[in-house]
Image 1 (cartoon, rainbow, N blue to C red):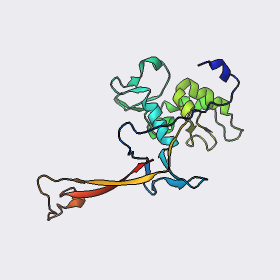
Image 2: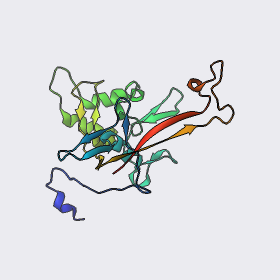
Image 3: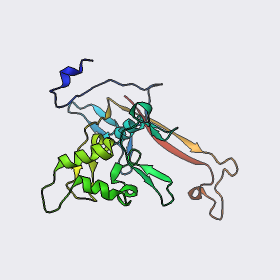
Image 4: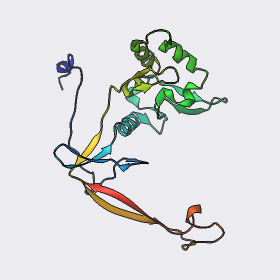
Length: 213
């Protein structure tokens, strides 16, 4: 690819057609109060959000993290990120794995967060400079600079949008209703004295909606 063509472009958009690796069914991202996100396109087609922007962010970050070594993958080693430890020095988590990156309570409640806050340079009595925030993220956690960040614990205006994002959607979808059962090989029927399905006992059938597109 000739990257010189992109020097003066404000953004790069990549579109790709995807299909399931095996079979025709897929399980989309879901939301507790909505279930799967289905909607109509402007042309009236049945649409489905397969992966949201926040879900794709997690998948993109999984691609740069080596779970075996608990570190960045080899080509990216040396890039800065924030590690949170307990009082004994044991690693608890880090800003790549946390849902809200350096806005994780395990990070902003740590003593060392004061250095990051100072670098951000927020002053409630002055206009906030997003350039200072970008510079601070470049120093402490480049991933948050790409992913986007909202540091409301510092100030409501301390935020940057995602520089790298994505989503997956399917068109002309149909529901593939399926399900299963959690089998209790010891006691299949509902028990007594609290030993029922609510306590994890007995056979528990469940339903699940998958989709084809």
